[in-house]
Length: 389
Image 1 (spheres, helix red, strand yellow):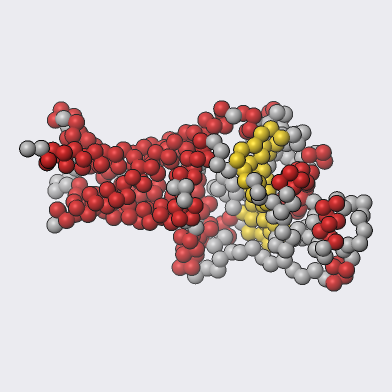
Image 2: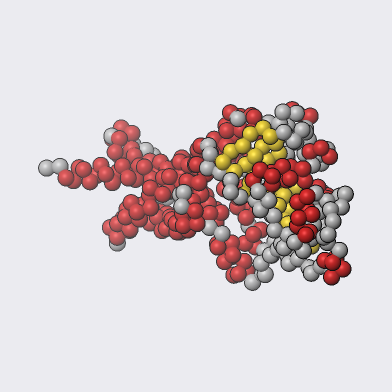
């Protein structure tokens, strides 16, 4: 029976081990590289206005609406923009662009001047993140990672069965005096047993973040209705008839063009932002998700004091035509599949516990890669020894 367990453990590891090694190394590197990237590129992350800048409403000369018009003029009126206001003094205002060009533009929130930009796949951090989260294969890679996470459970169980000692407490000693091969064998067995549950949690949270259907399944099993964006109400006929023929003193040319097509002129983004803040007076805007389509609500993600997610999961939906509040929901009132994300994401990245948890996450990534590498090395060396005469 033990031989069967050994064969199952060995060939499972040989099949998916390379993915686990890659995930461990890239995850540990990202924990260190992200703050290092901010330190190496202050022109992108540090506002030229200095420490005096605070995440407060911008002055009229650098409103969100003026930034939107500038971005729309360069990237096209149908592009989508996600505004990330500064969260700490001295930070830049970042805008994620989704259109013909995809990437992030960094602004000085005091003057509205652009400080730099990065393409979606530009830079080491972006490349490593794409490899870590999707193997550079988009949704296919995310599904593969979820499957590998499920297979890891089998790998963990078989490894624990092979390690399980006859007498307790178990011996976790590493015999360095009996050669490198024996030392690596002891290290592989002992570290795998001690870190099994912690590694399983890290891999499971990564799979949850990588493949969104998992959250939908959790919500479906719980029997709770999924929280969806509300639908826009139908405008009264009088409002539709009043749109159109001439450019008023308060309309920009872009708004007038929209009105001429029979659509509602958009409310300036700063008015919408103020309405979102009034929905959660104790919160701050973390992401303003602007879409160029006026037939769907605008979503604003807010961060309230008890929200563990660094990007905030409390959401406000607004009518882009008149700025009316359509719906709001706090992060702890979301459906289970979405609510769990508020804890899983900062737990997986280590942001939930600050530097100590981030160091732990990086160490687990290195440990996972070490287990994979030592396992492959042991298999290769023993295979080579058996071939010798």
